[in-house]
Image: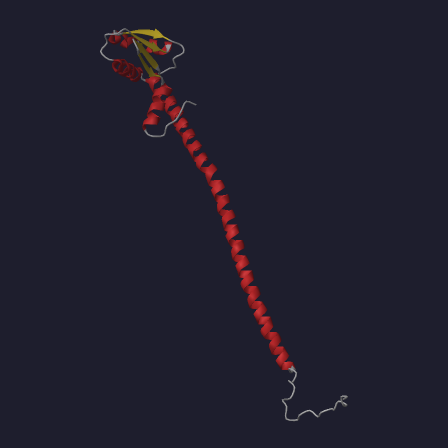
Length: 190
């Protein structure tokens, strides 16, 4: 048996109509919604990227500030040490002038150095600048416990006391450095 001819059937008229195409207003509304969604997504991504860039720049800035701060701290220490040395030199110059103007001050320094040695039972040698030794001639009888030795290597206003196992350094720089160290500034020899 052979199949018969195919019959065309009439479509049912009560079926749902095909979807109607969107209107221009609908298309514009869809386009506007898509644009808003894209704008919001781009804004969020841009904000996140901007925050990351700001954090990176802040970290760089902090590193630069820290790099500048380290040498400034060292520079501050260097300036403090230099100011201490300057103070020592100025004080030394002023004391030297005071000793020249009033030899009694230098005589007092020598007596203090001799007393620092002790009881006077050991032979002492008092080294003075030759000009100071002449200026201090009136005080020499008071220092019978020490033999005065003019020493051109000793500066004006300075003294050294040498004894059996004892040395007192009353040179200007040594005294001023000790004073500077005592007030907490330290300071080495220039």
